[in-house]
Structures are given as structure tokens and as C-alpha cells.
Length: 536
Image 1 (cartoon, rainbow, N blue to C red):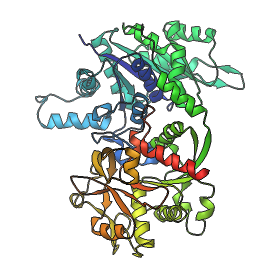
Image 2 (cartoon, rainbow, N blue to C red):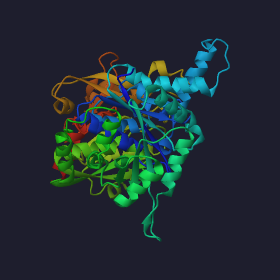
Image 3 (cartoon, helix red, strand yellow):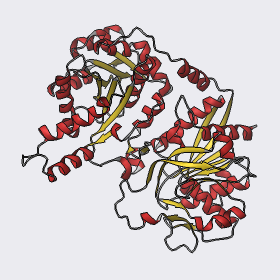
Image 4 (spheres, one colour):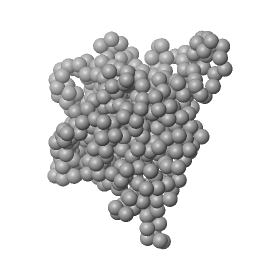
């Protein structure tokens, strides 16, 4: 008999209802009651991971400590729970099929015909239970991507059906997240789409144990009773999830609705300890009652889709609350700025963050933005590609190397101040070939970043292929661009800063991946503070 309990979160009626936020909110409540909880995401697409997906397709690619390129929902899980996720927390159909095909090639199936059932479903069940069998968790929440009825999620739904049968009702439950649309012409909420969605789930052999209903309007008791009756769930298992002003309100809303209580009841777990949300609510109070405002420009290439920079936006929320400052993020497309309009485009900002990205589109605009921040003493934070742009800008405009560039943008540049790592030069496959995951960095005492972190050695997550070219380090340092963080094993430059500037820091890693509600990232906290000082 398993000691780990499993919760499956499925979605119906429409995509983008927020399964990840519901899963993270429930996990937060269970964690606040003392349970050890983790969340994983099963994605039905055939890509092996989101690493090769365009941000416009899928939003940002989130990276874990162990170097997994994962779905952005894992960012929500970490931000809510303040516990790191790993390779095991994100599984795609691509990974499942890749693994099964590799096993077949090795002869592990003893010449049997390899089929969706049992081979693919067994692989899915195995992946679902990896985290549970580690002994580290009391409860594993598994979010099934996509919408019930999609062809591509059928093997996942079948795996859930089998697992629920194998584990028994006390050890596994299904939460179905659905939409209750409001018809303004009729002036009423409609339950029929949800009834159909639950019916589709039942046709696959799964009965929903709990219904979470996304809605723009309050659900009255009569409506809840109707849903319970026609969807075959207990009345107290119909949970309203009304639109919230911030995702960080959702755990409290689910607490008020009793989602954690009904979950624990069904899993035969104790619910006598009230959830301790003291720190969470202190954060919310600061977030909702700022004492000042700042405006920060986010200079990026994918600004049309906010999810492309999800972790950065959330990091500003955490750092803003820590400083008791409201951070207004103004998205600025780097393709639309140049020397002629830069001062107009960046007018009224208290700081700029030049964002990560790949490829040469919009690069000159980013370089122009860095120059403006450097010359006008505007607080600047460059992340990954943003840090590389700062190196190029300094090389061109201070060192006088007018054609300095990254070989990513111009393979023929006479001054490749940003270059490929030697071991990357012969790689043709794109997936998983970058410097990924957590790497160590030694900080220079007396530097801005040393003051920010308050320690000599840090670990930060990476996702990049090109590096600061050490051949130019001596020249750049002599000209005033200080190297203040270096990887102790490889000697690769991780951090640059300008000591005379109020706040000018470029980092090769992604600090946004490690910012959580409980631990706002110190670099963002310090940057927002610098922007606040600038606003005064």
C-alpha cells in the first residue's frame, strides 16, 4: 500500500483556466498544514521539452536547478511552495515516447508489439509515481495539460484511470477545473458546458471527485446544488473559483471555499491543523498597500506576450512587496527603439531591465537602451542576453571597438566580445545543448553584487549558449567595466557592473527563476530599491 497520496488536476470546457494556479494554491494550503507536497505537470505536446519552443508559442521556458527546460507552470509551483522542482516535475508526450522507443530498441519488451496500452500508459504511470516513491512527499499533485476530450491527452487520462483504480479511492482523487460561462444576453450563468465536460471525463472511466468552477460571477447555492446533482459530486465538493485581482489571492480564496478540507477528507488525511499562512498574508498586505510607485521599462523582443517574461514580472511583484513599492512594468519592444527616439521611448522610467532572448532581431534597440541607462545614470539590470548587450555597448562606445558584437548576431565580427564556448562549436542539435541549470559563482568582495547577496559564493540558474569572451576582459576592466562574478571552475564571467553608476549590473544567469513569495530575489529587491531612490 502506498503512503503517498495522489491528486490529479484536469481541465474542461476551455484551455487557460488556470489549472497551474489552482494546483499551486491547493499545494500551498496543504503545505501550510504541515504536509510535504510537490506538483508535476504532464504536457501532451510531442516536443521533448519547451526548450526549442518559441516564446510566442508557449510563453517562457522555465529552468530548474538540475537543468531541465520546463513549462512555465513549474515557475508558479516554485513561487508558491518555495521548494525547488526538478526534471521529474515536467513530463511531455515527447519524453514518454522517446523513452518507450529507446526501451524497445534495447529489446526490453522481449519482442512484444509496442502499443499505447500498456506500454505508453505504463511509462506515464511510472513518471507520475517517481516523485511519490522518493519518500520525500506525502502528497503529489499532477496537473494534466490540455482539455479533457483532446485527442493528445487521452493516454494521460487513461493512465489516471488505471492509477486511481490501482491505488484506491483513499489514495488518489481527481479535481476537475471547468468554466461556468455567463451569458450577458440572458443575464445568467450556464452549467451545461461543465455537465458535458464531466460527462466526457466519465466516458473515459473517470469520475471527478471535486469540481472547481472558474467564474466571473458568484455561484449561488442553488447553482452549486445543481452542479453537484448533475455532475455526481458532493455539494461541498463544488468549489467556486472567481476571478481574482492577483494570483496570490487564490490560496486564500480556496481556503474560504474549503478546497483543502474536502481534499483531505477524501484522502482520509487529518485536517485538524489550521493552515499557517502568516508569511503569505504579510506579503499580500505589503503587495496591496504600497507606499510608493516606480516605473521600470522591460526592454524585450517578445513583449506582445506577457507570459514570455512571466518569471521576471512575478519577481518584480515579490521585490516590490519587499520594498513596499508598486512596480509598474512598461513593456518596450526593442525593435521599435533607436538613437533617434530613445529618450522619448524611455521617458519617465526609474530603471530599465534588458531581458533575455535569442537571435539578432531587436538587438540594436537593446544596445541603445543600455547606452541610455549608462549615460543617464538610470538603474540598469541586464539578464543573460541583456548582460551580453551591456558588454557589446561598452566595447563599442567606451573602448571604441565600433564593430564589437556577439558571434550569435554576426559570425564575422572582428571583435567577438561575446563568443561560443569551445565545446559548443560543433553542436547541431538545439535541444538541451546550452549551459543549463544551477552553476556556482564567486563574487568580488566590495562589489555591488557582493553587497546585494551578502556572501561570497552563490548558485544561480543558467540558460544560454554564448559567453563573455575572456580575451577582452583586461581591456574592458581597464576601461571601467568591472567583472564582479566568475564561475570558479570554468573562469567564465557571470557578472559585470559599473562601480561609479548608481546601479548598473549585468548577469549571465537568470535570477528571476529563483524568486519566490517567501524569498524575493535579492538582485530584484536591490534593483527595485535603486529605482525607488531614482524616483525620489
